[in-house]
Amino acid sequence: MLQQLRAIEVHGAAFYDIVFRVVEPAGVQPETARIGGEMIYPNAQAGDRIMVEKIANVVARVEKL
Image (cartoon, rainbow, N blue to C red; front, side, top):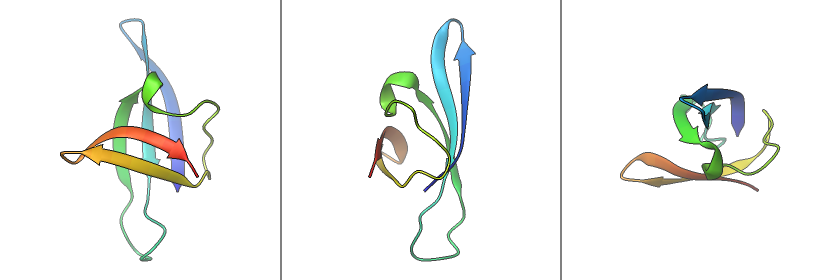
């Protein structure tokens, strides 16, 4: 689940700082990541159910379920 989303700009490029957590099992600590604007679906909102794709434990893509 996407808990927080904050758009930022670094040297003219769009990025997002995100906080997300696994819904099950309960009690898993939230994770954070900074991702490029092209790595997340349009109109992302806190509370969205998402799928996070990681490569070598680095977030590579976020899709809405």
